Length: 461
Image (cartoon, rainbow, N blue to C red; front, side, top):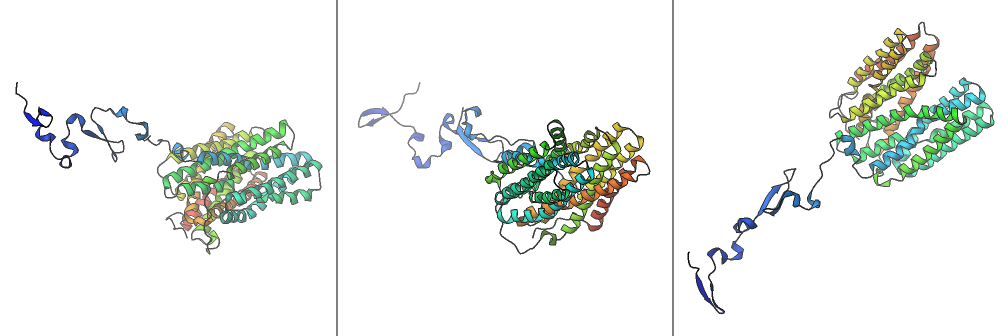
């Protein structure tokens, strides 16, 4: 056994230090420490960050703060992982549900009190037209002064108009008063547009995430217009004729108040621009023309289906179209690639032949299946169209631009409803009316192809 080296120190003899132990500290790096004391470099899951820890320390011994949870694989879960998104989406859903309730509730209570479906239809059409005219102006105020500052008083005025209509119907006032008070409901803000504007603000620069958000919003629209009429009819028939309007007004005001209270996700007020109306943006007018023809598809299909079925099952059969659109919208939102507007319109034109072919067989079950499949083209078309509106419209006018698109849709729905009703009354054969939505879809496709809408993105002004 070798003898240890001794050296003399002031305290007496002691072991002589090894050469590596009396090297200057500044010349020793961490790699010269014994292997059992050297830190070991471990790469994180993303291969970008290195964590140094002593050898022998297991990965499970790291502190929880050092672990970064992987983002959810589901794109919808990633959307709602953003702070504040769940709250404003819930409030907007409550506020949007009454949009499918007001029309049905008004028709039921007016027709029941005045014994005239013609009067009920005329009053609701007047309210729809007034809303279409006022909506862009309300949206412009929202862009200029903020969502919370404008949406709350505008909703309060609209709710007051619905309550006045309810009182007039209950007291059976002269018919002209119904037309007057229903115009007061036109101040209702575009709740769907405000929600899409929030997503556009939160997800700016991330087109894939914004695509998923637009798909979610379209699926929410379909859900509300599928459940709203059913809920309204149930309330009016089981409680009293005015119950549908009363509950819808309460939900509308509550939802907007809760939505407006979520200030952390509200888009900031953009500086005023001198660009004028979004209608001056290149490509906007042709796109609105496509929206007009697309709205005619929806309006005519609703009236034609109700006239063809003509029974208590007409509502559930028609709801299948919205169910198909809702399901397709959610699936489309998970897709990593988007299709062109012309492609989605072509799919819609092809699928609109299915209800026509099913109606010629006389089978109600076949018609239900045809409507379910035909509805699957609705959401992808609307998601793609609304995405184009967001790309074409300046950021300072986003609410106004999307509201113009909704206005074009409403005008198309009104025109389609009128055309579908005329064709149902003058049909040479029962399935004749289903030619109207097919023609409207073909017209929308033709307008898109001729004007080259959506062929190339245009920069925002």
